[in-house]
Length: 441
Image (cartoon, rainbow, N blue to C red; front, side):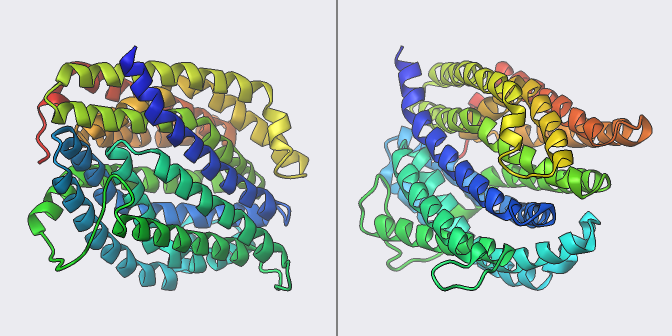
């Protein structure tokens, strides 16, 4: 089947890309975790704040990928190039303007988690340095998304591999003080990651300027095209709001988690790393669905667009179902890789096994949500995430965790229920087909 081959051709580089990125984050967590549960928890909380700010970047990257994919479907390469150029300049400017705010208010932002003082102090050290990389992270994300929208998932894979190798190597050197450096602990983890994204952003800009890829930029006689930027933001803002809603919801959810103590925070961070691995098939098929739905709509083939979305969802369900079975079986073997404290390991095992039951919902939400974004229908994923988080996860976490006394386990059960709710809403929207009539150019 041609559709299946097209999906797999786009999905497998994205899956490997996400795998390498997740391996890098996991290696970082293992290195930091070897210093103790406080260090593991602090990096997790600091990273959560960075993700909140990254969600603002989605306003540009989501709009960019939808407009590039539609332009490629119309065989208008110049329009695709123009969108990328406008997105890079406007988005990078905004990201770099946010950097000082995050740097100077790092400690205050972390206070909202109400974690133990040592965890907050270490998290502040991490966040102050990680904040310096936000602009470079945006350049990497926007460039990679535009290329994926154009059907090139291999270049982001190659560059991401270089970023990840650089990240692991630098973090090892800087965290533990190798090659003559002083041990820097969590500061070393943040600095290594920041430098790796500076390297990645530089590579993207050089390749795009040299016209070595499907898309290119010149920046010669550049002038801001407010009309194009407005269209990018019109499409992307609901996606950014979705991520902002998610990250704020996660922040509230993490406040609930932190109330159960440092061991629960550490176990949750281990579970999140495993969750990242489990997400990989969904992430890859979401990218494939985004590109193919957008391109088919641009080419005037709505039936093919719908077919691509459902086929990507089916493939994602199969692969993520297999992943769910594996992580359920090997939950303890996975948890002991990260920490030595038995109490943390026991709780991490519960998280991982509950996560296994959430795989069908995650697969559906990821893939069909990606299909909707490829069509420029970024509002419904926002609606699904809002209802899922604030209508299910947070109220249930409080009810099960506190009212029924189930503790952190109750909060994790609420997470699984929320994934199912999100999947229901995006599947309903995709089935009804209103996304086929959305205009983005």
